[in-house]
Structures are given as structure tokens and as C-alpha cells.
Length: 617
Image 1 (spheres, rainbow, N blue to C red):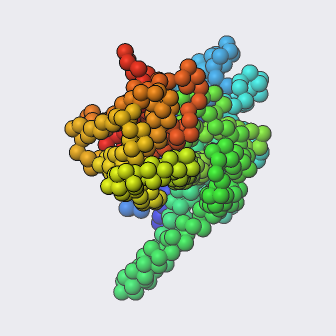
Image 2 (cartoon, helix red, strand yellow):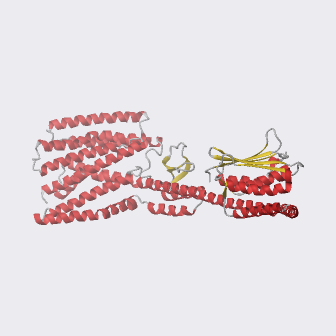
Image 3 (tube, rainbow, N blue to C red):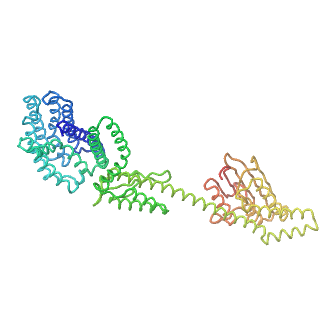
């Protein structure tokens, strides 16, 4: 391969490294903003970006035919070495991010870091002026490396001394292989840099290897740190994008090297097919890279499968506490994290890693809090997505449980209403078929047959009408006001024949239209109660009045009598008929209906008042 080919490959690698440094820097800025504390990595990405960008420009100028001693090439090289000025600051920021600057010697180290940075800058300016921007032939690279090594050694000593003073959860534990891997990679890089800077005579292949290792230090360190950043929420996304970038550049470089060795006509066909093949293969490559990151690098479980199993398991539960317990077990077993549900408005503790809201339209709101356990997985992008999925499934199931409870309550209401209606019908029938009532009515009819046949016939018709109406209400919850008043009139006419002048009746519809919907057989128990317990004990009898009146969105029904009034112990328990009326009103209208029984103000007797909504059923 020619020197220009090597330069082209170097330029491609530096371009990929520059893009990777910029990507890592942007992702790291997100992490630092999310955690609220600097990590020390951003200066490293800045140094890497400056170094790779300057070298990329230098090789591009050489490929374009610019002489190596030209001013533009030297400026590009000088730009690359500019990043080393920030080396001491980067090392100081690393140490500060991990153990802070609370003690006196740490504050002194910070001053020492700035002093070395100023010294580094002075040496850089001196070397650039003395060697006409050709820093490669000066002593600046070697001196800058030695200063960085001295500062690194001091930093390691301070770190070993002061790390016990920091909270264990400040920076988060690194993988076990991180320390050994960083040491070995640093030794390789430092050795290669020293061999290249000291101009040690090496063979051609060995010299090329040393040059590649010393110049292209950004690429391996970027990948190494990206893999080790397991405490960052975006580490998995960062790692996937980094590998995708490097894979794309590698495939493009190989394809270009093959295409441009062919004839112009063939290169057009080959380039077209190559681009089409890459576009078709892109989804497979992305899935392969995701598999490498998730299964090999991060050793993740299958979160989609875990979420699917959780969704299937909660379909069979019917209790909120069981749902919460199942969600906590799923999170703890999958992520190996401590988890709990807390009220949504409660304060978070300092050790909480994430807080997932569980908000439903019906019922109290909660939050799913997760915190690090003994063997916890790191909360990266897919872990957070898994927690959000668990929260979403939980919200949906809570809403479904609320809907199912409402449906069950509605079904119970309907069943209870049917039962009460049946009881009311049976009660009405029992009242009509009661031997005392029936025999008295039949005896009255028998007496009237000889003395007043026409009245006996009318009384028989009224009795038949009562039975016919009661039987017709068997499957209907509601009747009209006119139907109920007509039934009440027939019932009272029968009683009037029996009681004679002792029973006086008054029926009034007031301003009601008559088509208002009210519960079936509602008035009969009230009339029966008024006659049996109010008027029958009085020798002279009394008056019963039934009235209806509209009051806004309600219909008022009132049954008054001037009988003996309420017993002293009446409030302790209602009779069967009155209790039935009260329960039916509650079942049909919940709290919208009113049912009151009081003594008449200033007069003898009892007043029963019912308020039912006109559009409440």
C-alpha cells in the first residue's frame, strides 16, 4: 500500500474517532445534567475531539497534495497538540468528581493542577514559536506526557487516601475488570508514546504499530470508557451508537477500497449494489449490535419477555394489593433492585434511583420507587423503559379493576333491585290476598249483593283491577305517575267501602304531567301503613291525602293522614313495607332520592314525603 493509502486510512480512523468523541461528549453532558454532578469525562472527550480533528485535517491536507512542511499542515498538527493543554485539568476534574475538594490537601492539589496547566500552556507556546509550529520535532510532547504521568501518580495516591471519606453511592461501583483493564491499556499507550517520542530505532512493522497505537489512542479509550460507564442512564445507548458508528465506518472503508480499484463502469455498478446491500442489511446489523451490547457486554435479561409475562400474570388478579405485589416481584427479580409503592405526593429519599408515576383517572395515585440493592442492575435506557412498561401495565390493570368493580356493583344493584321489586310485588299480593283483607272485602261484597248490587259489582271490579295491576308490574321497575295514582284510587275505593264514612280520601296530581317515571307499587305500602296503623285505631276514622308536585328536577310525592301519628319507638325500626320502599329508592337512585317520615306540624297524624329525580334512572 502507498503512503497516500495509509494517510487515507488514518484520516478515516481519525474522522471516526472525532465523531465518536463528539457523540460521547454530548451523551455525557446529558448524564451530568441528569445526575446534577460533573463526572470528569467531558474534558477527556474534548481533548479527544481536538486531537482527532487536528490530525484528520493534517492527513486530509497531505492527501490533497499539500507539502508536509507547509504552514497549513503545521497548523493542523498544532491544533491536535492543543488538546494536551487541558490534560492536567482533566486529571484534576476526575479526582474532584470522585472524592471532592473538602480537605486541605485536595484543595492544594487543585491549585497544583492549575499551576501545571499554566506551565503546560507556557511550554506549548514556547515550543510552537521555537519550532515554527512543528511540535512533532520539539520536546513538548515528551515533557507534556511526563507532567501528565506525575500528576496521575499524585492523583492515584490522593484517591487511595481519601476515597473512604466519600459516600459509597457518589460515583457508583465500576466493573471489576475496569481497574486492571485501564492499567493495561494505559501501559500499552504510554509505552508506545515513549518509544515514538524518544526516536528509538525500530523495524518498519514495529514502528508502524507503535505509531498507530500512540496516535490513535482516542478510539480504544473511547470504547473502553463507554463500556465501563455502567452507572450512566444513557450508557447502553452510547455504547450501541459508538459500535454502530465504528461498524459503519469500517464497512464503508472496506467497500470503498474495493470499489475504487475497479474500472469506472464497474465501480458504478458495484457501488450501487454495495449501497443497496448495506441498506438492506442495516436492520440485521443493528439487531446484531444490540444483541452484542445487551447480551454480551451488559448481560441483560430479556426485558420484553419479562414485561410480557407480567402483563399476562396480572390479567387474572382482582385485587389492587395483589397487583402491587406482583409488580414488585417482577421488578426485584428482573432488575435485582429494591422496589416499593409510595403515595404520589410523598418525598423521595436520597437513594432512590428512579420514580415511576402510577396515575389513574379513578382512585389514588402512587409512585413506583426503585433503589439499589446488594446485586442491583444499573438503570440504563432499557431498564428505565422496562420500569415504565411495568408502570403502564399497572395503570391499565388498575383502570380495568376499577371498571370491573363498577360493573360488579352495577350488576349487584340490578340483582338487588329485582329482588326488592319481587318482594314489593309479593308484599302487594300478600296484602291483597291476606285472609283478613280478602275475607273482609268478600264479606262486604256479599252484603252489598242483596242491598246494593251495583256497588258490589263496582267493588269486585276494583279488586280485580288491583290484582291485575300488581301482576302486570312483575317485570317492570318503573311506572308512570298516572298509573300509580290510578292503582292507589282503586285500592282506596275498596277500603272506603269497608270503612264507609270513617275513611275520607283526597288524590291530587298538582302541576305534574302524569307521565313522570316513578318506582312501581310505590304508593300502596304507604297507603296500607297509613290505614292500618294510622286511621284504623281511631273510631271516627280520618283523612288520607295523596299529592304530587314538581320541584325543579325532582318530583315530590306526599302521603298525609290525620291518624294516631308516629309511635315513640318508630325511629328504631321500620315496618317491612316502609323498609322495602326505602331500599328500592336507594337502589334505583342511590343518594339522589329522599324518603322522610315525620309527624305533621301542628296537627295530628303522619306525613310521608318522597323526592325522586325526574331524570335519575
